[in-house]
Amino acid sequence: MPMPPHACDILVVGLGPAGSSAARGAALAGTRVVAIDRRKEIGVPVQCAEFVPLPMGKYTLDSDVFRQRVVGMSTVLPSGERVASDFPGIMIDRAKFDQSLARKAREAGATELLGTSLVALDAAAGVATLQRQGAEHRVRYRVLVAADGPHSRVGQLLGLPPLETVDTRQYTVPLLEPHPYTDVWLSPDYPGGYAWLFPKAGVANLGLGIDTRYAPDLKAPLDALHAQLVAEGLVGEGILARTGGAIPVGGLRERLVVGSALFAGDAAGLTHPITGAGIAAAVISGEAAGHAIAALLAGHAGALAQYEEDMRDQFETTIRRAVERRQWMLARHEQPDARADALHKRGWIAFREYFEADEPELATV
Image (cartoon, rainbow, N blue to C red):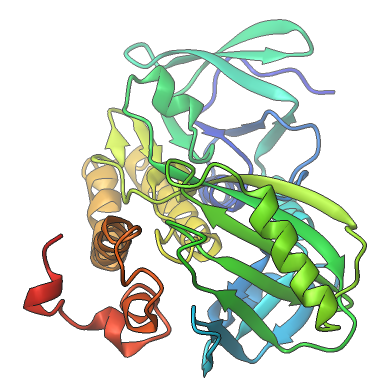
């Protein structure tokens, strides 16, 4: 296995969609890129519902990435009413997706080091201490890309405040009949989140996200939903796989560029706080980070500031609205109308009410 070099132009921490996209973009520009990931196998374990919007289709062309088309979304309100919406997309094999992006980064010239953790950081000197196979190695870098998820180790070592997150739990279950929709359940039983069934050819990802400050048990409500869908004949009783993870829901970091470190993807807080969607934003921000760093090293002094400005222009308005809607919903979690369909329509992107201004009587808690 290759040993870490003593120096590089760009050190990328995390080889998910953001990190691999940044590594590829920078390597294509001729910079020396080292990309590390603490996992020994990229994309494993999968901690994702595995849905991407149609514009991401060009990244799913590999035959082992694409799983099935989705024609729309079906939202189930607390009353049981089911509402269909036009949200087409693609279900992917997330592990294969991540591996495909990482392979393209390697082909562009990036050095990839798996089973390697960031353990210390001297940001002023531009020196990172990596741990690999029980030994520590110091690597000097010029720019660092933090693409290491919502619990970013880079963020911790820089002394930045942690991102607010919700917890998720997901089962992979047999799908007993073709299902071209993503299903979403809204309920005060899932405070700060929702439940989902995302079809993936002959199986489905069945999961939920919950703010555990309000409801600490994820297993019981997920098991109840599983039993309900088994009784309806949609899915089988068996559980083929289990996974879970954290999703950032508090919005963008206060700063996406800290000194010579750029934050991208989940580590930047670019995940949508209502839906949890983050793959597209990860790829977009990773590509932008790679291009910005290449421009900086080519002599464009304002390139990193331009990266921050571009990401905020593209994502901040949408994410801020989602943060506000999520907080608005949580403030009403235990109120008498917590199960009212009208309330949940204001908190979910499939309904026009989500995009309307709050009525004066609903604007305060």
